[in-house]
Length: 431
Ligand SMILES: *Cc1c(COP(=O)(O)O)cnc(C)c1O
Image 1 (cartoon, rainbow, N blue to C red):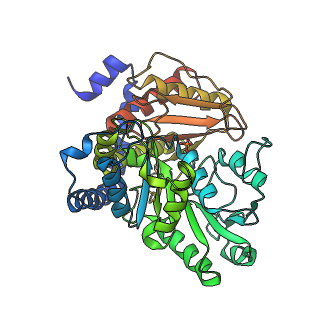
Image 2 (image 1 turned 45 degrees about the vertical axis):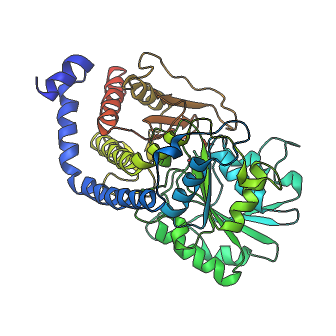
Image 3 (image 1 turned 180 degrees about the vertical axis):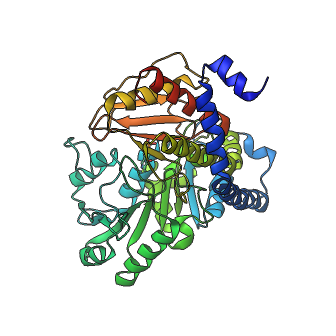
């Protein structure tokens, strides 16, 4: 049976949308080959690091208890450091999320009286409580420890895109500025993600004013979307989640921080305890998953980028606004879709869920998630709970009703998810 008939017969997708998908894919030939090239570069980078550090079967044996002498844990740190072009790394299953990784980097480096300067506007939603600009009080935020915070909002350039306001960044750096913070990905904002070249320009401008400022990049969703990482162009530390890009869909939990050796040492002391640092922490059988996940990561990120571009092209062909556009260069794996309508947004998310293989039969609804100010709808049928390197769509329920779609271990899973979403929107008379 032809694929078209199969999708129609077994997934109840209208043939006109399957025809539209054929057109979308032929429009995307150049974009897809660009992603494939980036993948090749990153796959070889990962292979080289694994060979150079003499990865061996013995590294897959984990530790228990204190985790002293865990060779696998140490080789993972060394491989991550090499892949990201850094002196050292801290990759752990007991870093519970991306927010935790970033929070550790902030608390590890900043001291009372220091100031943190965000140069990409408002950081990701969950960081508000960490910084102390959220609703919580006396929960141990940076503000509770008398660490100051300033932010420089993004400005519109001539093309109408939001950009880092380097003049204002330079003006806002003072004696107290210990750290500058850059968010590479778009987060829950209607803006483009930043390329590593743009990050390089910001790093240069900041270091020219004060060369001992520590530059931290929230690298969530950015890993392996380009041929260089922020730490290869002068950022001091990057942090991210193992259930996003670098875990390759195989890591079961965890976060990473890579960067300058002295920074990683301070951050490790925050994760465990002063005087203990990196030397303890049982890997509890997760070393193999973390390593195998990294091995697959560039490939999986490529599948996700192809899926995101496909999603964008389909929406464009249906007259729905997207960011980035289907043909654009990508610096993260997220596809934003602006529905301007709560019903359309929710129907779309329901469809993404319906196209999954795990929990395809459940219907997602908005709920009050910890760490987020608005109710959030999350559509995800994933093998690893909440893993957004697997196909997922989420959205805070607020105007202008934007869905953020990301991930996809296998390109075809994204295609099925998007087709199911379009089909549900049609059945609810929303197209
Ligand atoms: C996902 C994300 C985070 C937080 O990661 P969690 O693992 O969800 O805590 C932070 N910043 C950005 C840009 C993200 O995409």
